[in-house]
Length: 348
Image (cartoon, rainbow, N blue to C red; front, side, top):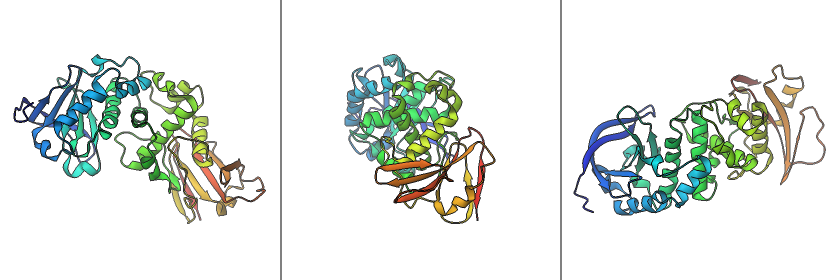
């Protein structure tokens, strides 16, 4: 293969200042010789920045993605039905260099539009034999889902579960981003693109919770048009409020969620202030605020629990119930079990 043979020019995918992925002006590309099931290109300007020779990166795609028995294909098939060569005929994969944005993104997906096929762009400066299949698998799920009318948080949850499947292990480093938080975000109450690693972390942890409790097969059962948490709860044969409660209590009680080491003991609200509680989110509160909850909460969407922990032993009880025994941790959980309501909680 001659690196000097520039096959054509193609629109260059990029993400703007608002984090929206777009197609830019045509740039020179090198066409790489993979099978007919994938169309792969490298922008000539990116080649000097690649972590490995472009021939090797192309070979990794051939080894891990192109072959029907490859583990990327097998991982995709666990989450989406009917994955075949034809699933990838209308997507182009680009090796590129993201420059100053390399610290923020390693890859991204641009949806197809009129007369332009979908695009997956990979920052070749951050690619290796390990990283490439994980990133490509993540972005291919977005492609397989692009015309299914799924809520963005469901699409992202599936993509992150595919990452963990291909990596053969949970995303520990990502999940660590929320381990010191006392004010924890919702896993579903936002659009894409997510703004920071905490939003990705809580979404990924919910996916791990679903896989662990309900089995990965439920992802294949998600029907087209699944948008709300209520829609998703139907797939799991449960109720949205119960689903939120189970997830939050599992995160905080030590019930096993793959890839989750638990919250730091110090991750508690201890100072007076006003705290935002979005739908599906929760607050971890120092037990000194117990008197704030001696009266029943006026809205049925808010639920409060006392969590007692010592080592692997955990007890969850009412705030009003007396504490018996000795516990290393004694804190409160305030959970917003609503799909739509948001609250401001004040501690004086």
